[in-house]
Length: 62
Image (cartoon, rainbow, N blue to C red; front, side, top):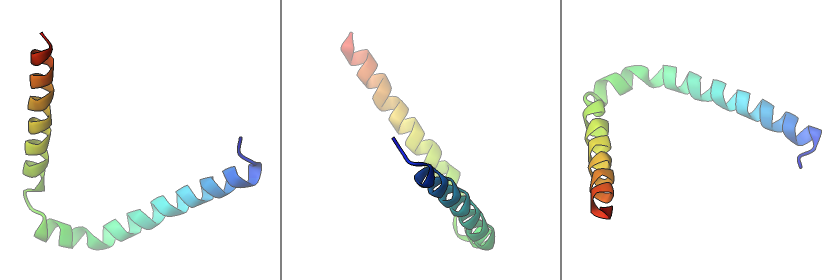
């Protein structure tokens, strides 16, 4: 399906991408802590809302 060169490129690209993202995140971690306090509350609210939608879907099938 894929040639050996394509697989090698994909592997190298993935490793390089993960390293670059990690470096960028470490540089911005102080900014994230300052400006994005309480972000977990939004995530929990979103997950709660999705859970309610699934519950409504399951209960409406009966």
